[in-house]
Length: 459
Image (cartoon, rainbow, N blue to C red; front, side, top):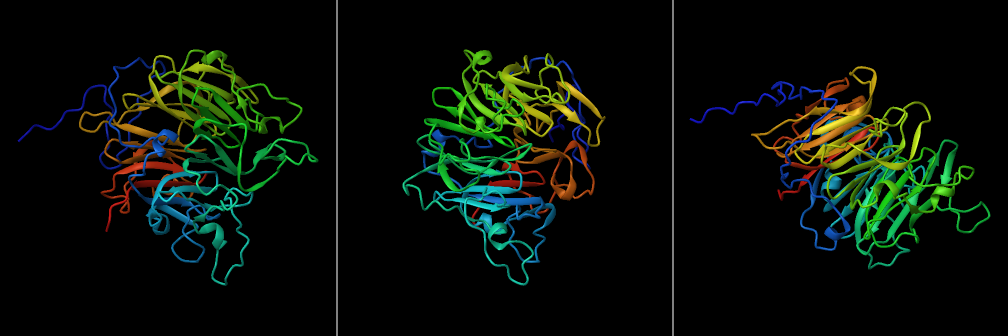
């Protein structure tokens, strides 16, 4: 009988009962020998979507559902307002979904039949359809919001092919396979609604709330999107990064008129000075932060830095501190992904490590960490562990090579998937009957809920 594998000295221990990572803080991480990660979590881009879809997803949800964001329907059965641990969403799992994204209190999905489906809060038009319907006596939620249903695309060319979907706090955006961008909803600022399209109140082009999909004409030849709370980034095929939305915290990465809060609604090119020569291949956003990753693993950040969430040790931190232009961060690491939260961020390296920085005050020391700190590596039979990461305002999720999901952070209403009734300070594997034997390949989430997906297997 083969001898059991021994844990290497630098490999974090795993508590078998809780499956928690024992964090190894390393304020000055050293470069690691790069290893190619197994391909598990599909990266969806416009180039991918011009090919036929090859799988449907089985969808699981947990967390808070007061606004219908769990997509479990309107009746007073099934725990549609709260799920403290993951459960299957039968309705979504039957719709041949191949991609999911989340806003603050709503979800968006793309189906193999090229339909966009939404559910959750429609307070600002972010569902892209009319949800003003009568409620029946046994409805506890609006049935049109809490039940996933297709977006109204009747005003669009019916030959359009959707490639990617993303959600911000109060808006949704969709990318087509030929590089066009459509959106609906609105952007918010500190004073309330900023609007969806730029203009004055008397300007016929100005739109405060866009209730159905509308093309954003300034954006062409786009191949990837990323969304923060109230701003959006777009990567063009020629490598330019565009931004639009609220620019109150420098998250647009370009000069906008500070006296006009609508100035940022018109897309513009992010200041490329400090990214000159970098071939940007991926974008990411936190609530009020923006990130870009190059083909050779360099990372750049800009936006709000009140808690050091930009990961730039050379930049001051404190209330109102912003960095309005991109600067390189995480030097010495080869970055493959970044996920931003409200006041923190995490990154994934090419050898499966997760690093984090920013505000940590939930079941952890109440300090600000500006330099990246090593969060831990969980290894499966000697292979690199993590292949995908997601960060929401106050909780994080990560997928391993084996399709297991780890989560940590605020656990109000079960948003981390741990039925513990308390916050989770260390990354811990979700142990749940619904996910048992499932190989999860995708995770997403909103402010207070999470979504998990795996390849759908015929029953």
